Length: 120
Image (cartoon, rainbow, N blue to C red):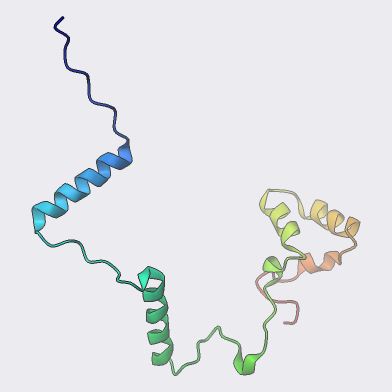
């Protein structure tokens, strides 16, 4: 029996892209691509952040002063995030306020600036 050779197994897109990248890299030079080192990318980003912090005198604009804990913005407050999600989904403000009253929350909070904290 003379059978044709079997067709090669299908290769996924990711494998093709990886093979193309390796081929391109080997065509450029014999050196391997530079790696982020033993610290990893997260440590490099942290080192860059520390460098930027030292340029700014050690205090960032958004950091609390004297260790004071800042309250989150109203939209990020876990007590009210549910209601802002309702607005994002397209529910009218009246329905959201009714839900707040049902849940025994103060519905006038929805009239405040959602990007500020309750303290401000």
